[in-house]
Length: 107
Image (cartoon, rainbow, N blue to C red):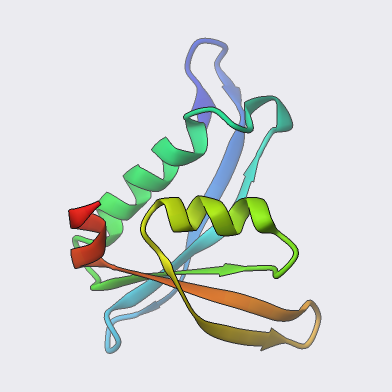
């Protein structure tokens, strides 16, 4: 993600775990410079990524740390709902949020 006015990189995000059989992909590992928190940047980045992803999958997954309330609220604003948990040997418990295509289109 680049601030076009300044020509500087302000953040990044990526797709992960594409599963064509299940029709899903994960969006995550989003990092945005603190100076850009609370603005339109994260929402615009996710909107672009979701529009692209939903050309190929039925569901987008977000995996969020339980203590990361800011990210939980951000994915809920997109229309994602809590769908369970995952456990990582390194980082421990993670919350899983799912956003089906029909919910995204309705939001």
